[in-house]
Image (cartoon, rainbow, N blue to C red):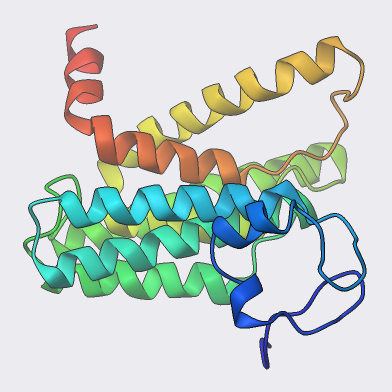
Length: 227
């Protein structure tokens, strides 16, 4: 539960409004807490930059106000999940269920991006296929190796992706996520920082794949059909 004002994670001092201005405060404070002089993680600056650029791009889209609000909410949820999963290897149910709820709402916003499905049947089928495409991997790996290959948080996130785009998109999104994950993980495997048994968060790759499909969906499908 999130309550009260923002506070320094090191000394717990309450952060004043003038020290909480996105990007500007980080630069002025030289990435240090005003009270304890502890280092502020560059992750905060990165999130603020991505959020700012994302909101600007959404604002520039020729969409209705409701569609822009929807995409902004989705962007915030994606960012939170992305960085929580990277740091803690977990996707909170509250966030996944909120994406699922938004995915249902989008069926009543026909002005949204054409890559989103507005057919309730396709949407529900996509949610089910998205969930069980991950669940079956978890089930089989558990039976064969007696350990968890992935978490149900990934399955719920894929359910949200399926509800947004429809069932036909699931194989392509999973393929893109796997390729992104492979590219990101191979260097650390070659350097010996990770091995094949290392825990790797898959949520960020699912989110990245969903964004890639949202932007380049038509081109990707044309390339697949040509091949």
